[in-house]
Image (cartoon, rainbow over all chains, first blue to last red):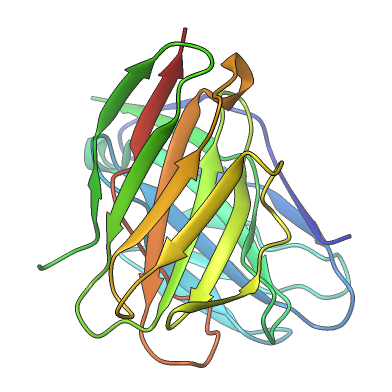
Length: 112
Length: 115
C-alpha cells in the first residue's frame, strides 16, 4: 500500500543553520505530495505541495522538489529561525476518494 | 467559526466506558476527515465524510468505533467500550468542495487517555 517514510527526529539546529528533512514515498501512480507543519499548541497546517514530477513547492522560505526518479520530496530551508520549531509531516495523495497518507512526523527544534 | 473546532480538548476515561468526540468544521466545508495520532506513530486515517455520507470507512480500527455527521456540518466520533490502546490524539480536518485536493484544515485535536 501507499506509505511515506520520514527521517526520524528530533532534529536540533542552531538559528540560521541549513535544514533538510528527508521524505520518501511508495505509491502506485503519480501521487501529489505535501508537507504539513504542526506548531506547538496548534493544529496541522499545510506548508507546501507539489502535484507532479519536478514541481517545486515553496512557502515561508521552505521548499521541496518532487523527484519521481528517487521517489522523494525532501524539505529544505536555507536559514532556520527559532519560530520554525515544530513537527513536520510529509504526506501523499493518490487521488479519487483516497485519504492523505502521512509519515510519522519529524520534530525540529531551533535554538538561538 | 474561524477554524475547525474539536471538543473536548482532553478526555480521561476508564477502560470499558464509551466516549464521544465532537468536530465542528469550517463553515461551508463539505468534506470532513478523522485521523488518529498515537505516540511515535504517524497520522492514521479513520474515516472520511463527503456531506453526511461516508464513502470511506476503511480506517476504523474495530466495530467499537463509529462516526456520524449531521446537517453536513458537525461530526461525532464514538468509541464504545474503550481500551487502553485507544489512547491517542484524535484529529479532525475539513476541506472545501468535493474535489479531493489534499488541502486539509485541522483542528487542535482531542487527547484521549484510557486508564
